[in-house]
Image 1 (tube, rainbow, N blue to C red):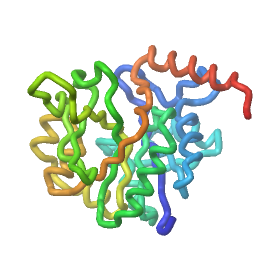
Image 2 (tube, rainbow, N blue to C red):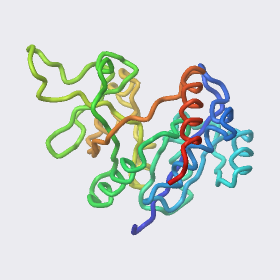
Image 3 (cartoon, one colour):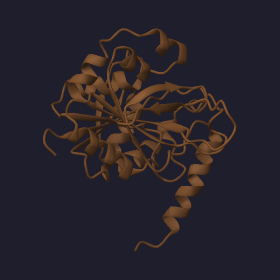
Image 4 (tube, rainbow, N blue to C red):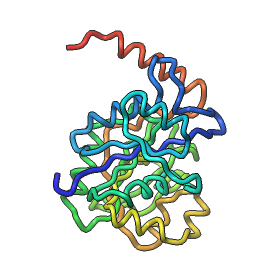
Length: 250
């Protein structure tokens, strides 16, 4: 792909509910290693880099042969960390993948990259999928509504769209999947934009782009990756990884 596609996995050691999460390795591999290996399978990726400010994570990444970029401890968000890496490189498209979500759908991410490559005027793209039963009401699940061209109209923790009348739902609830593809220059500019009222109200960084009049392309994928936020989530991942490892290769 012209211009190259940089995939960045921002990883931090601190976590309120699961400290040291990227370095958990009950499967025999670090969690960040699982994500790195999944990212390396993307057909669109021309480079995969783990971005961190923690030398323990950096050492682990180097131990399994991954490329790591040390970023500033002052980075407030994962996108800040991704932008710091992108600033020193020249790839046209930059993919922000969560380092603690190794079970993302690679086909969905590749489709998103292709969609961004086909529409050079778009600054940002992201993924969504149809929400599962019960997710609509949970404020931990971010929802998105789009126009007919697949551009985001709004993201919210509230249940949107609101179905005023009972009956069949013509507009399904879409769950936002936290994978982003940026044009490099757009990402660097985005980091310079001031925070906005809706961003602060919902605690959703992508609303900054919408409030500043940017378009965000939304590609609807097949599924959201299971989040790993608690010890129970990680235990469930270990069980799934064990089942997957036990399957004979075709």
